[in-house]
Length: 227
Length: 86
Image (cartoon, rainbow over all chains, first blue to last red; front, side, top):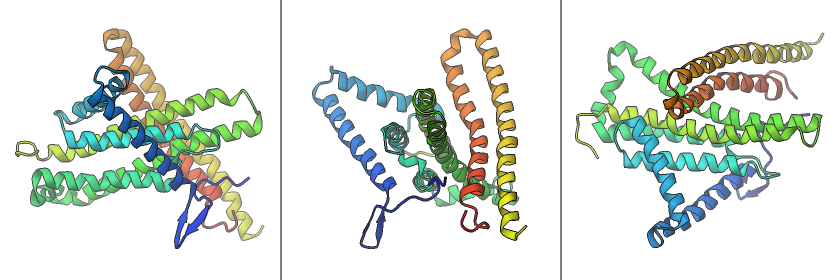
């Protein structure tokens, strides 16, 4: 048995660009989220008392509470970023439960792309809230000798973020696959439930950790007037 | 034994050892988190929501060390650059 864990088949070539199943499933996740939350947003505007509007308000309240708790004050830009991450990863985990499909985040490339987004967002937010010099100065504090450690910590936490998401999503499918190959029908169901729980939990954790990293970059600029 | 066989044998043994030792560490850490969480729940039942939430986050973060070991074990087994042909 040689399961496809680190590489995956190419479905078709679009000119020089290979189209893989991960690209299709992440596109499907994005499109589903856009349609669902487009409908929800319309309902919030037009039928504020309806159930769909309640879904929208609850989702927004959940993400706002999470970000506010981590940062210490409301941060609307970070709410959008963290909320998108949460909804995408949770939507991907739910999509991965459909028969025949794997979650796009169970691919190392897709998980790394999300982690790299967080990695890039940290200096952007830091420079925006403190200015380039003010942001770069925090690398030299409390002591210029610690500069390599700052850089290593930024890279290694990005690596950990990517590997944690990829490993959790991939291992759930792997375990279910092994149990199906060994025993068959009813036994894998609890493990599939665990896989679903872990997928949603990983979405929460990815969101919290990226909020902590970006929130730390915002708090470097506390005391400075910023948006 | 050929060089290829030695490398393959070493990879398989190390994959098992990686998973075994890594799982011991994560299991020990998770047991301590569980014990501390139950202790906190018994002391302050009113804070159960907050305690459970932070406990789940801590559990998942500790568990990710075991997941890193799993990834390394899978690299050794299925994506080993030194054993050609897997």
